[in-house]
Each structure stands twice: as structure tokens, then as C-alpha cells.
Amino acid sequence: MPSLDLTNSATLDAFYTRMKKFRAAARASPIEQGHSFTLKLTYQASNAPNGHRRRHINPDLQALVSKSSRWYLQHALQSAPGQNAQVWLATPNPDAETQSSQSAAHCIVLKIMQESFTDFPNPRWSPDDLGMYRTQEDRVSTALSAYERLSDLQGSALPYFFGLTVTTASWGEKLHILAFEYLPEPSLETVDHDRTEFVKWTDHKTYFTLAKSAVNALQAAHERNVLHTDLASRNIVIDSANQQLVIIDWERCEVDVRDRDDRAIREQRTLVGVLCRVVDGASPTGKAIGIWANGRIPGLNSYVSN
Image (tube, helix red, strand yellow):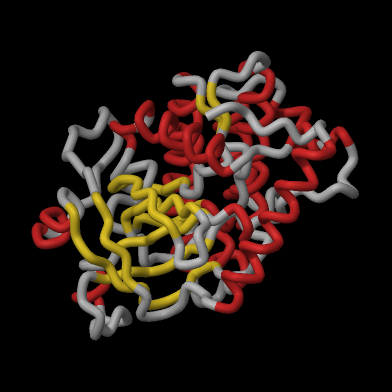
């Protein structure tokens, strides 16, 4: 598909008008709880690399995510316009109670990418902002490339990716639906907001182990020319069974960038900053993470001290 030339005023006006119409139609007939999609899922098991422990998939779920199957939206995880995508918890059973651990084992996460749902460009945007806009087609294509390159990290440092389905909404807009493993445990953002409830995760030995797993995972992605570009505590989830962190939400990623080395170092520094803020960078655990990472990330010591 040719790139969308938003520097052309007629193209920009037409795109903006089309997206406004789609958004209005979507609001009149919203995607909501109980809505179902038939998904063509393509999960295939593979071996985890050394040092990474792969999460077990329920056999019934594994069968469902390896073929075409119907899924029902149960709970919105992200549904406010202006985001990268709508995110829903989905189940093959329309009457399932997803709060139970048994039902959760049969759930998946659906990212429903709908361009009119995003903060799409308008004629008031500056040329620089227009130049930075990435269309949905581009974001999906890049994400697929990244998940393929990082396939051996799925189920350990990344969530399992079960496949992409392209469909058309009732109002005529193309939807890209990406299906992922559901991780029911807390994100670092949740831990940071309630350290008392989640104190077990900030124990020195436990958190140090978790932090190292995240840095190692990100560096593995960078070795394959994949940059996450949206590292934040909300995008890092705990895998308690395997004592590791899982980096999620790679849909804003970039691959094969020209200044990869410099940007990779900056991104690794960002990750260490995120990890240290959860436990306070001046704490013994924060300092230990900084010292450990300093031997692996160029210039980290001066970055952390600032």
C-alpha cells in the first residue's frame, strides 16, 4: 500500500474528513462488551532461548489460538479515543466469569486497531507533526515484523502473539485485530501506585532479579534491530511464576532505524530509569540495579546521576 502523503493538503483534508465520519459512526455503533469476532489465529509453539523461562499455555487455549475461532469481548482494558488501540479481554465463552483463575486461563487480549480511534492528523497540525504520523497500516506492518524477529522471546520476555485478523467494522472502517496472551499479574505502574499491597515484588532480591530480566530482554530486542519506543511502567508486567518481567505493547515499535545504536542506548537508559523509580533510585535496590546496569549500558552512570 503506498504511503499516505499528508503533505498534500487535498489528501490531508480527505483523510481527516473520512476519519471524522468513521469516528462518528463508531460512536453511534460502538465496539462493546459482548461483541464477538471470528479470529484466524496462527500460534505455533517454539523453544525459548537460554536464560528465559517460557510460560505454560492451557492446552484448551492452545488449541483455540492455533485455528479460526470465535471470541467474545468481556472487559475493556483500554477504550478511550485518542489511544493507539482499543484493548479488550476476550473469551471463547460469552458467559464466562473472567475474574476466576480458571476462566482467566482461557482468556486472550485483543488489540483492536481502528485508525479513527487514534489521535489522527488534522489540517491544523504542523508539517513536523504530520511528518511523524504513522498510519495504522505502517504500525501494524512494523509490529508484525518485530513479533516475528522476537518470536523466540514470546511467552517469556514478551507476551505470546497469537496472530492478526483484518476485518471491516459495521460502519465500513478497516480493523486490525492483534491477539495476545493475557497476563493477569500487575504491571510496574500498579506496583508503583500501591507499594504496600505489592511489597513482595519490591523485595531487594526479587526486584533485582526482575529488573535484570527486563534489561536483558530489551537488549536482545535491540540486537535484532527492534526498538520499543514506548517504554513505561504500564508496559512492563510481572511474570511471578518465572520471576521475570514481560515487556508488552510493541505496536509503536520501530525496526531497522538508521541511528539504532544511539537510540538503543537511550532506550536502555530509559528502561533503567523506569525500573529504578519503582523502588526509588536512591534506595539500596535502586543503586544495585544502577551499578549492575552500568557495566552493560554505555554512559549509564552519568545518565543516572543526572
